[in-house]
Length: 295
Image 1 (cartoon, rainbow, N blue to C red):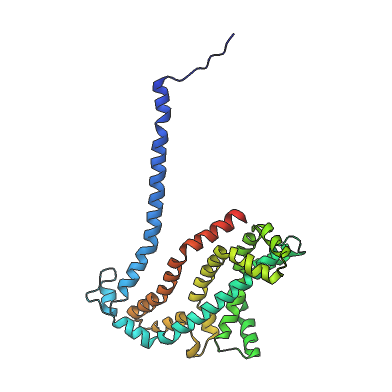
Image 2 (image 1 turned 60 degrees about the vertical axis):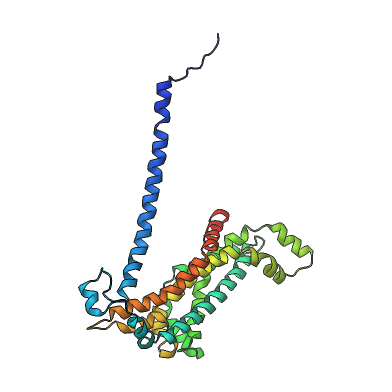
């Protein structure tokens, strides 16, 4: 007795194959629609922000969503002078650059140490570092105020750099530790067998391999530090050490607001962040993917 396979009829086989391309087309259309909506959600507010930066206050209220009647750069000139952007922009660049560089480097050191499984209490220290993400800045502002005043840093750029470095460590350790743990151990062991010290192993082997993660951490922390408002408002009380977010608020009053100057200042503060992101987009995506897949 032989078994015979029952094959579907041609018409039934065609009906089974037909929905698959349709489902693929529908899925592709839905994904495209979601991406278009997400892109519009980001670009449309940026577009209105740019056109509003060229308008006067009366024109802003009379025609908030239309193009300006005259494309004048007077708002940018006034913002540069009245909001002291010529002073707050360099301050923001210095504070953000130094804080990101030091915080990212220290995060890489900590991540390399915690990624070594032979180290005792590594999991506990990792949890301790990452738990810093749960602490809101408002909860530490009073102790920070007292500490900075006691050590004589209050009212200086270092009063912003030091807290930013400390607050950037949790995110750096969170992203870099799984990435450091996934590095090939054979390279590290080979470097040690060649007589390299731990510092040389970190500087010549580990640190270059962490580059995608370092870029990701730098961008994430850099955007936050660049736009941070609360700490500079409380700590940087002197005009010569204020950052751009605090300077922009000077245009917002109780009875009137120079909206054209506000948007012009926001555009100026947004340009460096956008340029930095565009230059490091590939490394940023690679770092997030590496941490997600190998962590």
